[in-house]
Length: 144
Image 1: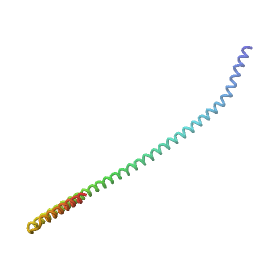
Image 2: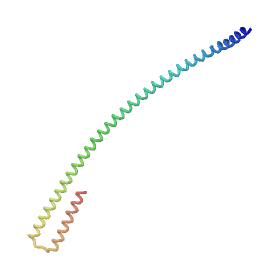
Image 3: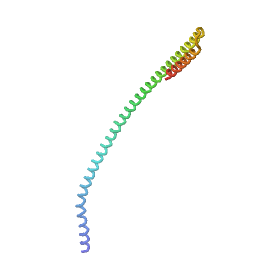
Image 4: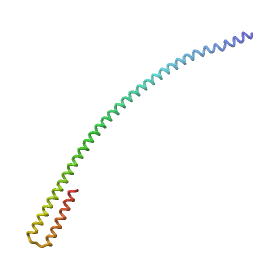
């Protein structure tokens, strides 16, 4: 009887295992299906990420190209302004030299006229002071 009891005991645990195997099979099938869905979602997300990166790279390239063009354009405009300011500076210097030369010529003509005409020396001194002040004002204005 010990043998029959032990075989009955062994048979009893095997029966519940068979019943447990069927739900495990369905669980494995569910897990496999879930795994397949997750892998599919992961692949989809990877593809989305690659598309996003590609679009982003394209936008960055476009912005860099635009920035480069703007930079070139700005450099051309800056060079043009520098050139224009240099021309203006040269013109102003030439005008200043012309004014200075004219004032010197006027001063020479005044002094030559003074020696020919006999006038009161006090009046001549005042005229020279006015002429000197006018020349200084002209030079200052030309510099500004």
